[in-house]
Image 1: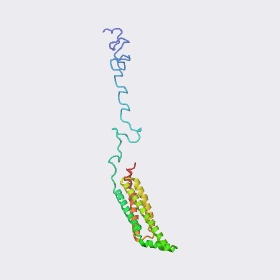
Image 2: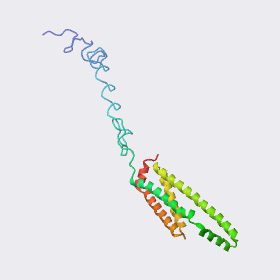
Image 3: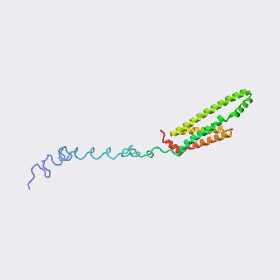
Image 4: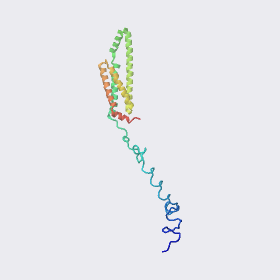
Length: 240
């Protein structure tokens, strides 16, 4: 067996000592070398961190907010939330009844005002004249004062009636538009109406008393409907 030629290393392909070989750390060599070696260099070889397996930015989607709260959808849409689909809640029966009772209360209010407008008559006028004569007025002065007072009282009743009807319509049309302020306004005026009606029935005639009690009963039922949870929940969805 002949010895290998001088300068060649056994088992090392084709190179002399110190010359480029097949494997090695020489810059022009194989793995990890510069372009031109036996195997691709790092830029063209196995992928580096930038071009290899996905890093955090390109990997699995991270949770929004540092992992706190509900995870974001991987499709880019908002997570499901109850009540976010299906549109507004249907109008409950109690709310429809509330609007109906508003009109019923308006009708009772108008009827309860009629005795003061048309049923006072001559008897009330004569009572006023008699009382004024007892205070020292002459018959003519008492009659004139009674007519003046009766006219002022009638005018006051008409103004109160018109204002009351306007407030009823304000509340009704507000409820028609699903406004919560209409419910609150109606509650305030219903409570005030009950208080003043109960004060006004003291010494009233039977017809006025019956109409006043009917107005109080309707107003009380209206308040029960207005404070119901179904009505409050229904109106809450329209708040802005």
